[in-house]
Length: 572
Image (cartoon, rainbow, N blue to C red; front, side):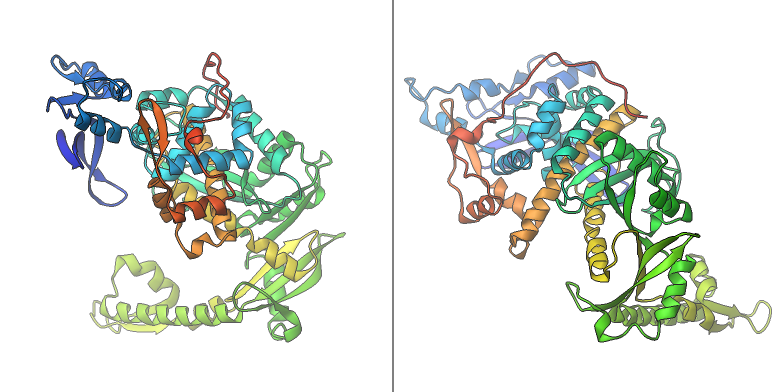
């Protein structure tokens, strides 16, 4: 049920349509507000945005007597005209003030890394809208349906109003050809001396009409259908290179060959190096990476081996008593660990580089954590032996018996063999490679893959992809593509903040809050930039971006417009 609420901001009173709803993710009621108008300063009467009037008409409601909020009239205030109400002019000028700093940074950074040029080339008719939505996903962290108000309050965008209907049309306005062209051009620009890290994330959806949404292993533990997003990430540039979507029922192992073959075919790559976690490990995948796909394509790889693989467990057992030596020290960002390199047979005629690592501090911590957990579990079992939520944990680590049938007393003992087996691999990990023979290099290369996992976290949490909130395949494909564009920009920001030391002074969110305070106003049709703070100047210097002035308030990017194409079919 919606209602009209008022909010006073300075001299102004704005009108909002407020709707209460139940947030299923946060498990609590919440409120959704959309700006629909304001109280006119001169007449004291309400004026409404065109979107809201159109919405009322579509719902069959009368809009007779409701005045339009004419933003064009506000921009046409003539300061030189006489007579003039100075108070009115001041109010009109203040009402034209918009946020500028955030969009300016995102726009200039996109040009600096080459993203803007590729968007204009590969999506000539919709690039501005795609870029606006990508900026919104980064800066606002809200569903796309609320982009209109954000776009209206920010200066420097070339798209104008981004209503829900316009966004819906955009999500069906381009297809597989445009996306493929972008991936090819983007990889061509950043491919020099690149390792490619590969990882998969899942995105859940409530929709039953997205063909690729199927039930499978859900990384978030949710009982929902999902799609799998497989991404390749440049480990030198720290930027996303390529992504593709798979059915939610497929596992990591089954998608490896298809993903790298598809990527190689699209980019023309002949020397691909992939870095993967243990989710991609299987004998079939290792054989494929060693022997190629039958088309002459060769792959260099570094992959983590699970302890369930004989090659990993056997090497741990072989090195358990001898690895803790000073000549086996591997330097890390934290405390040093131990590591050795060995050559081991793979099949009948092939040898692999096997790197065995041991982290003494992690081993002690994991041992203490396990001891503490099992002790706590034992105490809970004595107090509540029939706890259904802990039943699986009880069964794994404890033996619970009753002296007499139906007795309330229980006898709880620890499964020492289970605890001992789990402790055998604490602090250990094993990497396999067909081209890296130095354990320090192998460790450093694999740890750079962390950037992929952190990016996926931002992908779902910061970029509004925790839920797809679309109900068809073509729109789903394009929304994920737009989020990929946002991830490129967000990753570039993250890498600059890390290398230039900005994280020592501010968080990712604090950077945007600081830049949002940089405003631009329109006075008699002329854009005026408000003064910059020292912190804002320091941010632009860290990103090596020119300082904005009144000339840069409007997008200086050349427009390339044409007739919008019909919606292209989404990639299968």
